Image (tube, rainbow, N blue to C red; front, top):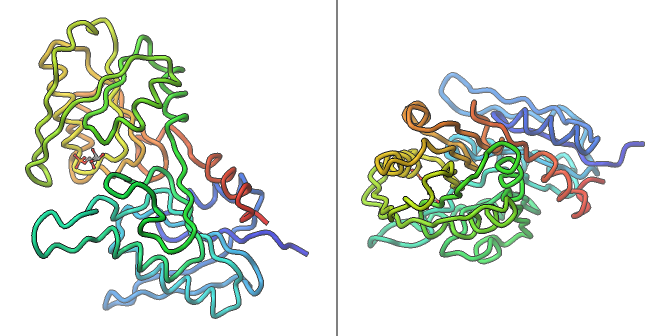
Length: 298
Ligand code: R5P
């Protein structure tokens, strides 16, 4: 009798779900979703889940669209007798509004954490944007495992870039940039960023002339509007540096950000936490190892 977990993938996370199930040697559960003509969601759990541990994969690239269906799926799994539900969110959304910057703003990092904590038993994610919150446990009421893609980024750089200079665009990036640089055996620089609006960032770049013979490699956890990477790439090229390689964990790339960055960058590569044409670094092994260690793999 099979006692291992069922891996269910929410819409948009099917490939991540399949990769993870393959790595775990786990069964994939069958979940049907569709939209009613008025836009409401239909969700059906087809597999028999009574007594089974569940791994529910949902990468939150479009969280407002995805959250309600996730709630319907998780609640239905429980009603049908599923045992523990582990949410694997390779990209965890709503981590950046971690403070009331202006009076009256919703601190959505904490509110989203509270909502998700009510629906699943555990969370496994990759490089959540931890800045003012130092750990997920500050806002999540459930056990939450934070995995780091830095070693994977470092290994990609070591294998693919000659004489890299690792560059972090802002102070928050120092945590992963220093780790990546250490493992890749490369020097690093952290720049200063000022954000004036969603799509308006200013990057202060010191004179990097001493590193002119190296290939700049921009590292960031998230490419959202893409402005951070675009403005940094533009500034570097303006200084006479070589076109940078850009290596990101979560490739959201809204609107035409990817096309615009592609015109400046030598190469753009991302992990597959968010499905995107730039994906070149798989996190499936990282996730599978964590689930095995945590005993969610049966
Ligand atoms: C910010 O603090 C993050 O580390 C990223 O630099 C930021 O989210 C990137 O956003 P965007 O692509 O919109 O500039």
